Structures are given as structure tokens and as C-alpha cells.
Length: 75
Image 1 (cartoon, rainbow, N blue to C red):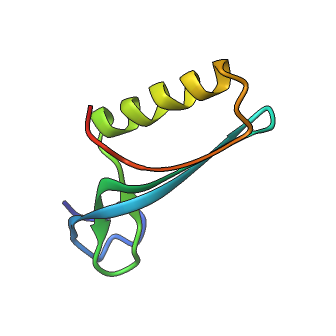
Image 2: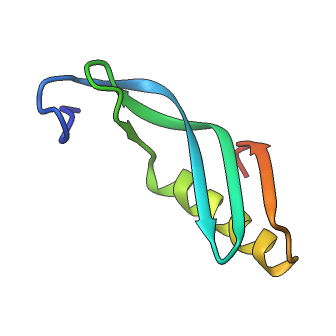
């Protein structure tokens, strides 16, 4: 797909690192599948991967965790 940020590059399969912060909780998820622009490096995470990351973040928040760093693993 054409990158919507730089409007020049095409995206290719790759990985992203997501950092989510909310109410004192910081979650870092490495190696999340993404489409990455070959020109500017913008990362696009698909809906299924984003939903998985958000679900795991919600579980960590409910457990009272403050910092979580983990690799992405498909559910």
C-alpha cells in the first residue's frame, strides 16, 4: 500500500515496537507484525494485532502492573 504519511513509499511486511501508556502503566510490545514504509519508516499495525495488544494491556492494567515489556505472540 502507498504510505499515507509521506505519500511516496510503499509499505512492506516488517515489525514494530509499540509503547502504550495509561494511568501510570507503561507497556512495551516488541516485534508486532506491521507494514512498514520503505521511505519514511511509518509503521501500520493491522486491526487484529492491535486488538491483541490492547487486550493484553487491559489485563496488565487490571493486575496492577506498572511496567510490562514483552514480545508479541499471536494468540
